[in-house]
Amino acid sequence: MDVETTGFESKARETIHTTPVADEDPQLFRLLVDAVKDYGIFLLDPNGIILSFNAGAERISGYNAREVIGRHFSVFYTQNDIDKNHPTQELAIALKMGRYEEEGWRVRQDGTRFWANVIISPMHDAQRQHIGFAKVTRDLTERREAEERLRRSEERSRLMFEGVKDYAMITLEPNGTIATWNEGARRIKGYETFEIVGRHFSCFYPESDVRMGKCEYELKEAIETGRYEEEGWRVRKDGTKFWASVILTATRDRRGNLIGFSKVTRDFTDRKRAEDLLRMAYAEMEKRVEERTQELRTANEHLQKAIQVRDEFMSVASHELRTPITPLKMQVQALIRNVRRKSFDALNEERMNRMAEACDRSLSRLTLLVDNLLDVARISSGHLRLNHEPVELRSLLRELIERYKSEISVSGSRVHLEITQDITVSADRVRFEQVLVNLLTNALKYGESKPIHIAVQLRPENVLISVRDHGRGIDQQDCERIFEKFERAAGVSNLNGLGLGLYITRQIVESHGGRILVESDLGSGSTFSVILPVDSIEHSGFPN
Image (cartoon, rainbow, N blue to C red):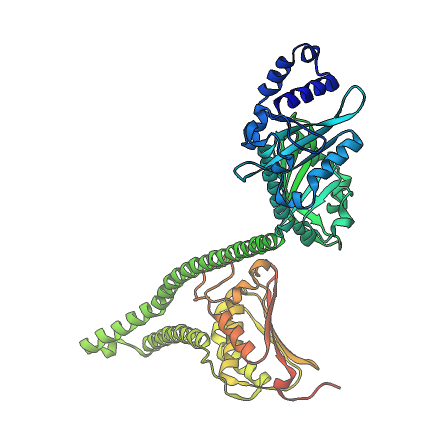
């Protein structure tokens, strides 16, 4: 066996002509082959019988040379390959094609498998007669396992990439065209893979952004800084917009060369809408808070003004109430003194009359002040009641002018009444008389001793009663204010009164369904007009 093997190896060396050294020194050639540890190198006869086995083959297969030389090389193959006659087919292909190479599973002595790279080359002698095969085997199990791990990792990454539904995950070529497309991208943006791969990613952007060069800017930023991130509006396939969170990352190879971009997009439309609604609600709340603050500020200003008015009223009221009380008290005390001294004879009739008149005036004024305060209380509480009855205006006005003859004389004014016909209205006589008295006394108070004109005019739609004086007048800005409680026109603080007369007058007129107006200019006097609706007129004869 050894002699035959040696002769076969000699023929193999002649055929292979590996190096000049191999021809000159067969022993050196054997040592060279045996020294190779990473490759299994062995020779087969034409039928596949193992003729030689180097150290590398022993290390890889687990067999030593004595255990395998003389056995068929199929000993290294899996049973499945043996059943399919794969070893014999390999030799046939090598002989026919001049070479056979493959990678596949092989079996060690202990039954474990390893992944082998196999090269089988036919050998011929000098006469080109086939004398066997050279077989080189390399154990690539580690590389195979690494490749398998890489493959599984890539598969997992692919499945994860394709299976993610909440994120649009795509890759772009360096020029921005879309290279890959996952399920999340399809769900968020609406495109199928075949519709979008190969198109430029600018198709997701609003036209205005595309015109501005936004897409190119994003790619440039990602290249220069490594990534670009923003939130903004993007466009779906159907043209609708969604609010997107976008991260664009530049991808480079080991040498640092740009190979494309990865782009992750998330649909934050619901969050954006919630934030907008929250922002709007917050703005509305701020607006309402500001409005409420302004209301409170205004209310506080009104309260402060009311307090000021109250204080002023208390001061004026105390003064006004004290004014009639003081002379009344003096007159009463004088009477008491005379009663105690039993000196009635000292009080002559004229003096008694003067004292009685003074008391009467003081009591009348005091009564008026108290009545006004009571009227304000009734009006504020809604308890001002009216008892309607027919009231003939001409006789009522003449009666009032006669009753206030003394006050008219003291004022120095003359009162002119203009009424051409009998006019009867339905009104509370006492309250309506109170209106006319307030207007008349008001004109006497501010008329500066100039003539006062009272006119009554019946019109188709209403009856108009006007009281005009030619006194100091009222500033335009005060014309509405004087009808409020405790208000008087500017510059009249030297005159007495609580500032309630016109307020009460207005409330009584309006409770009759009418209106009261004032027209005035400073220095030109004032005209107060009471307008009663036509349905308040009981009887009238319109002039023909």
